[in-house]
Length: 199
Image (cartoon, rainbow, N blue to C red; front, side, top):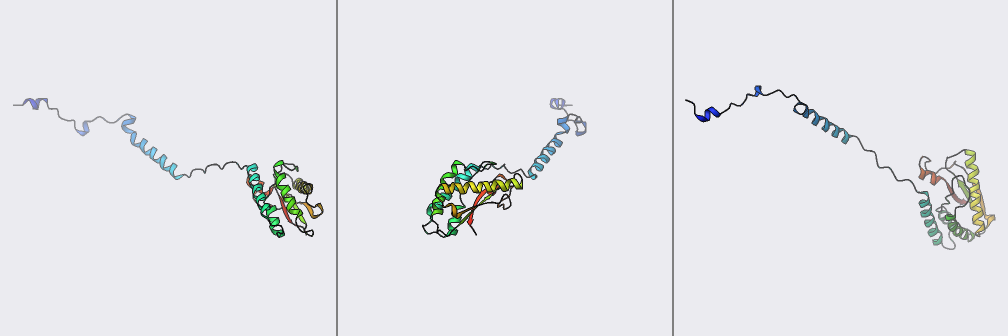
């Protein structure tokens, strides 16, 4: 005789009696998890691009350079060697507008200080003012522009009191780069006025 508990007991279905999985969530979730893990692994292996560098600020760079030049020129003793004077002069930046040989207003103070230092040099010292450009434009155009810029600096120095007969302006165009012309900062460094003892 069966007891009441035996009558209500239901046999659990055997494993083979369970319904076959048929929906996506029943069959596809292991593949979905595998795909997500693979995507995360691939993403972790691919190097990310470095953050873009901020645009080079030519006005700020010129201001900072001219502040250093003013400090260096002010620190020169009265009988400073020519090499020290030339190094201090070459800290200054005359940041000409593109295609222009007009002295920008923010360079006038440093050129006035430079003129006073040049005027204090011995009478037998002559200085070359070399104009240089980046490689934008034609070789002939850059040569003419660099010569015009060097002459503009010479004229500004003479107007501020430097002896004109001890200054020589010469343009070199883009023939003597000191940095790569592939970047804005490099082009900025190549567009320069460079002082040197004149031969």
